[in-house]
Image (cartoon, helix red, strand yellow):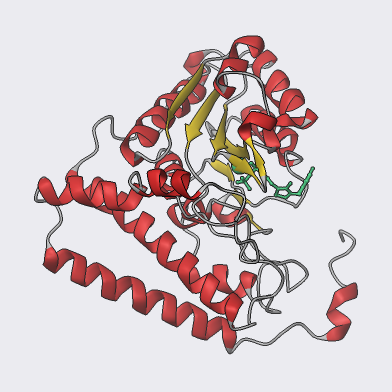
Amino acid sequence: MPVSTEELKPLRTTPPVLSNQNRVELYYYMRLTRECDNAILRLYKQGKMVGGAYTGKGNEATAVGSAFALKKHDYIFPLHRDLGAHLVKGQSLRNIFLQLLGRGNSFTGGRDGTAHYADPSLKIYGNVSHLAAMIPVAVGVALASRMRKEHAVVMSYIGDGGSSLGEFHEGMNMAAVMKLPFVLIIENNQYAYSTPTSKQFAAQRLSDRALGYGVPGITIDGTDVVKVYEACRKAVDRARMGGGPSLIETITMRMHGHSASDDASYVPKRMVEDWERKDPISRFEKILTNDRVLNETVMLQMNKKISAAIEDAVQFALESPYPQGGDGAGGVYST
Ligand SMILES: Cc1ncc(C[n+]2csc(CCOP(=O)(O)OP(=O)(O)O)c2C)c(N)n1
Ligand SMILES: [Mg+2]
């Protein structure tokens, strides 16, 4: 049921060229994400985290740059490395830390941790544990959204490991056949837990799979926030205009163990050192400093703002109550 482009006029175009203010925003969200991740690791070591702790170190440019290409009414299905996407989409730090610390007043009421939550008011639909299971759900949302003529785009994410699952194929194929407003980002960060990409797939590039679905596919440097934004904006605009889905592979590195409890001793030291030179945040910082967009005063203000916001959110969450025992039976069935 292809839709004519007449029906899908964009409500507002995202900037084709980023202004300096946009670039500072991108930098700010990457820094905020990194500092949140550091706070998460600290809380984990203090025994305050409920369940495992995951970071998106190395993935900030992909998470932030991609979500920046979305409008408020677009849908996002982020993964466990995509805290930056939650933040860009407008999630508050207080809500993030309530969820991570399993509090009773969090989105899931303490039933689940990490970013396994949904916030329909911001159109954020976090992942469930089962990798790739959300892809067909996201595709279904794209179909529903088109039927409702919302002019919205659905952006979903998957890892290099998760891209081997059947739901990846099923979702991508359905989105392609129905020309749905859907963008799938493959975060190729070299490992799926301890499995390197050489043992995960034989294709040269994961974006080559796009040809098999009849959709555009591109592989980009996932540590370059501007490149990520530009590629995603193109795909999002295309999807919104009725042009159908796209596949975007971002090449990154998981700069930390799979979770806080994984020392990643299976990753060659040399490899980590090489990727450290491509750190998405320090690279962009250099560019913005050379362009005189960032200076010491701006950085100082930003650091203060970030520290204060994280401290407030962590404190608020720590002081919030755990769920009551009896609450566990609630919310099981839809009323
Ligand atoms: C279907 C399924 N199999 C296994 C797992 C356990 N698991 C959780 S994350 C993960 C690694 C995922 O790797 P990748 O998709 O590359 O994402 P990354 O963690 O590297 O960002 C595994 C094996 C799972 N959650 N779901
Ligand atoms: Mg991976």
